[in-house]
Length: 585
Image (cartoon, rainbow, N blue to C red):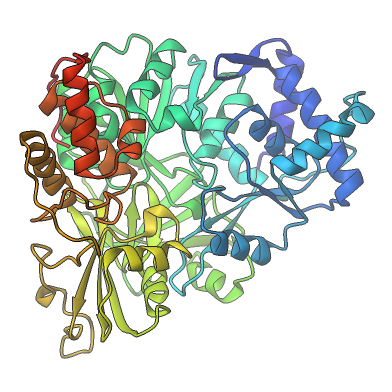
């Protein structure tokens, strides 16, 4: 077992290449020495002013800039573990995570401002005098929980180090030096983008929030910085595909796609219409980032490939016996990547992290994922045993959403189901029972107080009762389809009149799966979100041959407002983009 910590790997790289560029963000370059010196200062400040002890938890609530990276390093150098908390999360969710972790302190902008006032006191850049073991916690990342609250997954240094060692060799990253960091800290694949870069001597391109939200700016950032490794979820790739492959990707060498099932249509496109080496990766948060991989050009059969050499996968039946080739069972993962368990949830930890029936003293993680062995030793993913979903790469327990709905006054029953195609869940539908008339805006407001954007249903359907099977389970076959059943927005319906309004309304109807769009209906009240916004962006720019940005769509969120803006563009002859072919979005 590797005895190194994440900080050990980083320190060795600082000694080896102190003046090399470790980080680029918004055209600003930062060396390994800069990150080391500043994180030493902040680590000592944490130890002296916050009384940090080994394995204390420290929250990180920062924007995407160099100080986010410095803060992560400083927490690990102090002997603590970091807890990412998205600044865009609802306050109730932020409060729950802070309370559940008993965070020793929270590093936010206010915290950094106070540090900068006294940072000169720590100008000797002396490393923190803390002995950290590979078995100590590195981070706690929260995923959706079935009981109404998220659960914290505890990952140790050794699991991350083992992963980094193997991915660098098995995915042949050694000669690739420029890696894009595009993922929110609350998603564990960010660990690869950050520490898989600065711990292995590479350069991280930290893509800022504004560029992440604009496909054109995002792709420009990737191309301008000559990014060689890019990691995306299938949902994110689907947002970007028309822009990403619009012109040759001269420097991009590897594309990692994971976090949710890769749709067959996307697989075929990447396999047949691009020369890019694309790796389909799979793995739950509980087994540290990725557990298996497939070079999609190595086979004509879509699968999640084979395990990395530091992990192993069993496919077992309900009696914990191995399934033969071709027979579906539950994936159980063992090896160096296993989490310590769930924070403050010992019973759930015992339920999900079981004794390995084949190796004494070893553990396995019960993923809840179904799969089967293929004849060539690869694994085909076959879905879930339970109601857990992946939406935009984030793992979601629908029970948490249903519990939130049931806390709304006069809602007596609720069930949440996925909506999408080809295994890619793009939206959630909430069916509920209530004697009270609710419009979409009111429900979204209630739900949005507790849940992040990716967990808020896009559609709401009111029923007299939830249909059940003879065994008392929800009979999904009897639930009505969406057409014509979604709630009203609470805004008086005004039909599209002008040609521009009609064309825009047709686009909205298609993307929002709605049979009627009023010109004054709010995009978000209709179930819109960032993913749907990007799909609408592509369709508008193609349909009208304009170059509208995401910023404009967020500003003009009704058909009426957007039609006025586009007509003004035509009047001023601000037509700048050509139509381009795209994969169906």
